[in-house]
Image (cartoon, rainbow, N blue to C red):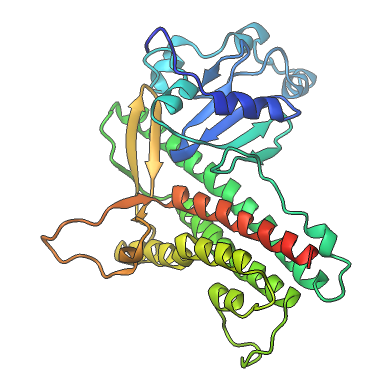
Length: 343
């Protein structure tokens, strides 16, 4: 590694914002950084300092607890080699070099904090101000549930990426190779991606229904019939034109593609008769990244697969796209909540 490491000012600011010691940061593509006792970072968890409660239990049973001095010393050279670590490596510096965004901050007590694409923590629109509204309370509470689901699955998806990257590191160390390209058996990763995209879709629709309830109009619709977000927004004639244009632009730029990404994930599964393998890339000693390719945004993403021999369609990572959609869905919710509260 070079002597002067690249800085990560965004991460440094986020670490200050959390009122608890941060022990772990999960970046995009599954890069996992664990804080070590001397305030540095490692790709593997540091051993605890001193005896642990488990050591006391072993001692009570007449068994020998782990050597506290050895536990505080960190991984040995042999363990570094077994883990695929040829030398010291700073995963935060590697993430900064490759432009990998922080996704999840994990505090000492296991509390997780999402990081949006804009760099802010998982901020919430003040839905509670609508809970007592007789016409909007029920829909606002349903929307709060959808935001909870979206944040939950976003965090679990980031964790699944990190778990897949750790599995790649162990596999590479086991077989003594640096040339892994795919990794199969990552069922949880695909399940969480699908659940996150589903929660994003439902959040957009929940925001649209809240807006429609705040600005009711006479519409010739069949009760219970499926309706899209843009149709809900277009029906709210009482809302300001600027608000409707903002929401429709957000839907056209992001929300409309959530269903296409879900179909792309399921098409991969069907083609592979199960969950397709994820793609692997080795960035540095012991640091692997994973990705699940999906078509890039644009109307072309909904087109049929190119014929054999034709030029391949550009692709992006599924979690990167889902994270952008989730961030935009939260922004849409905030616009709707403030508009409904001020009507």
